[in-house]
Length: 137
Image (tube, rainbow, N blue to C red; front, side, top):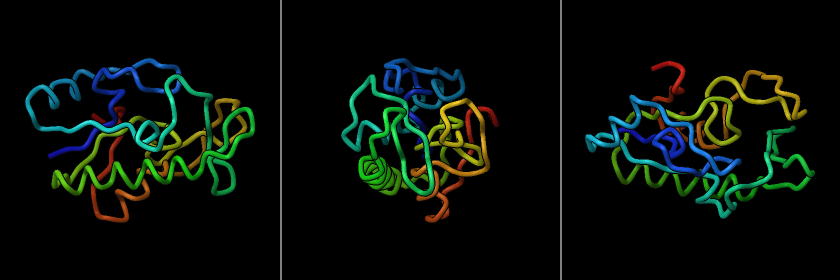
């Protein structure tokens, strides 16, 4: 089983209240081979929401609110979904502060990317679950 970012499966859950559908992910979900999660919603953040980026080990909104606890809570709940479904692979939304893999925004809200992983991605990797972005499909 594969765990996937819900926005890639056509669910309108990203910070803008939109989805970012990916045809391959849609097919995996349709075929019962993937389960969807949105760690940010699981952590209690609404949709739409103020954009957030990682800054010095924390997750901060563009307005300056620290939402690290919500991101951590959502990542743990999403990890439980992955473990309960025996997922050994994930396909997550690139650049996201939750789901980004290898590259995330730098915290300046300028669109600049730096090396790093999202909060959920880090947990998956710690548990030995393979993580790729939709860009790698």
